[in-house]
Image (cartoon, rainbow, N blue to C red; front, side, top):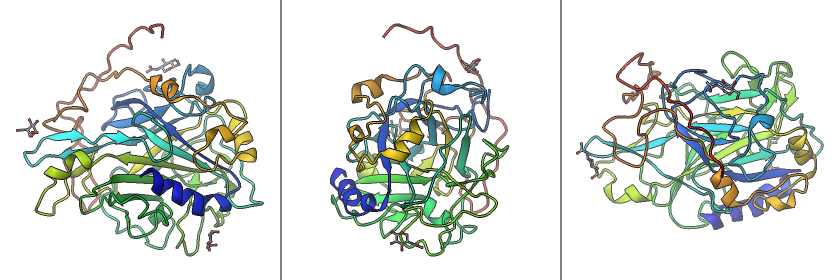
Length: 381
Ligand SMILES: *[C@@H]1O[C@H](CO)[C@@H](O)[C@H](O)[C@H]1NC(C)=O
Ligand SMILES: *[C@@H]1O[C@H](CO)[C@@H](O)[C@H](O)[C@H]1NC(C)=O
Ligand SMILES: *[C@@H]1O[C@H](CO)[C@@H](O)[C@H](O)[C@H]1NC(C)=O
């Protein structure tokens, strides 16, 4: 996978962008927390969370996580932001579920699980305004189970996709995320011998006023790219007048290691992967972001850095952490339930499989754990 990504990065991304940061964030914790959607209570479904260790169940916007985090699982020490997505499970023919492991992305080092984060600067002479302290947003809708409301020519159709790796390094190298024969909006309908990468673009046009909105979406819009045949990576569209402020392009990649399941993949053509919210379609793909960069560090990086995709030390504005450092920044699981590592009789939380095409409905209660346990006292490292 490494060579595929490097090839693409070298051949296409870099001459076109003014600045680019591409870096790994290891797993901080995996549990049923979602402080944007369900602050203060255990969330309906499991998320994988990366970034600063001030992450907690409530994430009060008044708290400056850049200051209260004492470490971050991301490559740049200044990035105390949090990023999270749902996780994938493999459903065994016997009805049990096991979490699909996540592995380091090509070219990013030996991070543990987690994801790859990009901050992209638009083409020359387009100015971006960095996210402000307290900024948050969500992209995608966990209840979606169909693509029938997604216009295939709209930026949305390129924003939340899956790449099916065929196991032949380099074979997908010419295609930008969201584009080409290896991509799909829903989960791939076949086994992918090299694994699956989910691609998650956040919108890049801000209303310039609200750090957040009750739905966590409305303060943001996608660029209007008339014919996005090259995808939306290049950020070369225009912002609508209601959301005129351009912010850096935030893009996440998560690599799901489906290789351990290839031998037990269903022979009948059915699709055995399911997102933690009971979504076997993949149309419920979503992600959350809480901005938490220290002082003006992201601004400075956007103005002055191009790490050529995989050379974070090229960015002199920022402090690079080692793999050992990013892998050691973790949090204890505070929901007393098993979510990974073994086969489970059901998805954690109340998440029966809902196939769609109608949107899923929330299941109010079941026997799922709904309380947290006390955070263990901090121990010296
Ligand atoms: C989250 O962290 C803040 C600041 O450290 C703290 O005041 C708050 O009580 C925490 N909330 C929870 C639910 O842990
Ligand atoms: C299903 O198969 C897995 C893998 O062999 C096993 O660990 C699990 O216990 C099985 N579940 C049931 C209900 O038999
Ligand atoms: C967007 O940028 C890419 C790369 O420079 C270019 O090939 C493409 O034509 C542009 N698309 C639009 C709609 O401007």
